Every structure is written in C-alpha cells, then in structure tokens.
Length: 413
Ligand code: SF4
Image (tube, rainbow, N blue to C red; front, side, top):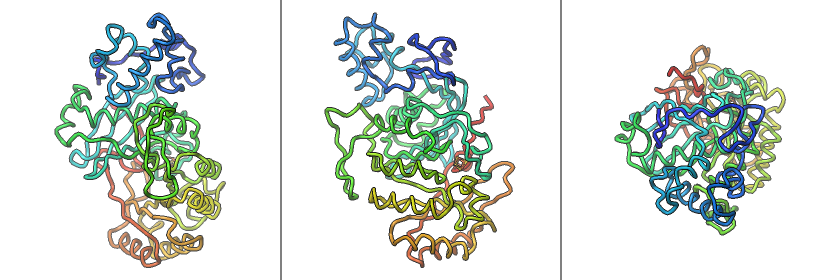
C-alpha cells in the first residue's frame, strides 16, 4: 500500500533515524516518542531548513494547522509554507506507521487496518461507523503480556509498547480517512463508496495490548488527541481549545475509553490523571476461581480488589465504569453467574457501573464458543432485574477478525 505521498515502503537505515538521532533499544527512533511538532526538536533536526529558531516556530504552527485541523501531511496542500514544504514534511512527518492492508466488514461499517511499524512489527486498529458517531479501536502495545486464553492478541505474547507517536498516528490515519477519503490511498478507494465522510468522535483503547502497561505514552498521546476539558464533574462537560494547549485533534477526553484486565496500579493512575476518561474493566467472570482461568492476571489482582479500585475510580471521577463481559457457552453464561455478578456489583453501590455483554468472537484454536441467544437474553434480563444497567454490545468486525479479542496483526501480504 502507498501512502498519500506515493511512497511505498520508506524503510530507514537502522543505524540512524530521519533526523540523524539515535535509535532506542527496541529499534524505535527517540524522535518518535516526542510530541508531534515540537519546534525545538524540528529546528534541532533540520536547522538548514530555517532562517532561525523564530522561523522554525512559525513553520511549526503552520504544520500544526495542516496536521491537526486539515488532517494533511501532503506538501502540495501547504502553499503557505512554500518550496521547502516537501523537505519540511519529510522531517516533521516521518512515516511511523505504514498501512499494509485494509479489510472491510459489516457492509462497510467496520474497517480494519494492518500497519507495519518502523521496526517491522505489525499492529491493527479498527474503525467502526455508527449513525451518530465514528469510533476507533486502537492498539497500545505490540502483542500483550496478559495472555487471556480466549484472545488472539494474548496468543502473540508481548513484544513492546507503542510510542506516543505510534498511538497518535493511528488516530490521524483514521481521522483523515473519514474526512479526506480521496487521499487515503490507491488500493482502498472502494472503501469510500461505502460510507459518508464524517469526523472521528470516539477512541477506545481496546485493540492490542493492556493499556495500563503503557500509560506514560498513552497520556502523552492524549495531550495531542484530546481537547482540554473543563467541568469534569458532570455529563455536560464542554471542551475548549486554549492558548497553552498542545495542538490536538479535539476529541473530548470523555469520549476516550481505557480498557484494562484489572491492573490495580494502572487503575489508580487513571483515577489520578487529569483526563476524565471512561474506564472499562474486562471482567468476564463473577468469581475468582473462574476469572483466574479466563483472565490470568486475576491471580495477582483478585476480583474484589479490582472492583474496589473500579468503584474508587467512579467516586473520584464521577464517571460510570464499564464492565466488559464476554459470554462463553457453558463457561460464564448461566443465570447463577448473572446473579453472582449482580450481587458483587450491587454490594458496592447502585448506578456506578454499566455492564456490556459481548458475544464471544471466534478465535482459531480456542475451545470457547459464543453463548446461545436464549442464555444471552436470560443473562441480560437477570442483570437488569437486579438493577444493573446492561447492554448487549453489537459485535463488529467478526467477518474480518476485527472484533474484540480477534486482533492478531497477521500479514499474508
Ligand atoms: S483480552 Fe486484552 S488483556 Fe487479555 S490478552 Fe487480549 S489484549 Fe491482552
């Protein structure tokens, strides 16, 4: 697949990055952990492109507008910058993600993209279109160390954390594909006949990886993904752009969900963070005995500890917590399981959680299968009758292995 500058695979020499700076021990240029468009870094990287540091600052501002507002890294769109725009773009926008392949599912409403990173690792993200929103499910790590046995990502094992830049670029790529479909690339033009252009509204960290294991880079990325927010304490939170804010994509932090398997230090850090994020807990079982089989980290952080931390998050942030529960046939889907789940949630208070029931998605080699429709509806009604807000989540991307637990970044190209 080509990018919008017609490049196919601009591999960089391993000894030196685009800016002549060193690579870190996992083969990722240190520049890629910087904020996007830091004018000091830009000036230091390519002083010959600027008259002085003041001009570097001006050019950086112009590049910011193109990147974050016009969603463009194409020098042909940058007449305000002039003839140095191509060289400037080469330095400012190194291709940290190379889109390799796209698959379209759900009749065009779900699009999975496979990316190659600079060190040749692969990751995936999934864009889901709804009548009222466009949600991007992004990866925070290459692989995952948690090893849930029903999850394709878990089978890959852990390779490395994504840098903040690699996280931001997943957002940029999806946002641009929605608003400027023609620029998306020659091999994917058919995608754009399937839906109308629109803006990216929601982000969920539910792709590859356990996000709480990479919070430094996620927080750094959120500085450039989210508009700063005020009035955090109620649902009418508004977002503002301020003079001091980093340039960003303007997605409200309230529309960003971080999903965790239940890493307590991570949940506590999220509670202390300035972002009013939505917390989702991948619970999947109402007892320690069962949960330790499905989500092995439960042996370290047991159910009570995880729910206590989640409840604390609710109290601190005044944001209802999502409980993710994948229904597996004859494993965790009985009425008794539903009653036990309601009991442990209600014990901590009312109205503090929302349970999302997820039809289990097939993963090759996994012994678990999805619950029957009747078991699913009994489970759902049992929770509702016990006062727990519960939704059966529409499963997206099953036909392209892009549904929850199916992301495994395999390339056959
Ligand atoms: S379900 Fe989430 S935490 Fe568990 S292995 Fe998969 S990606 Fe990791």
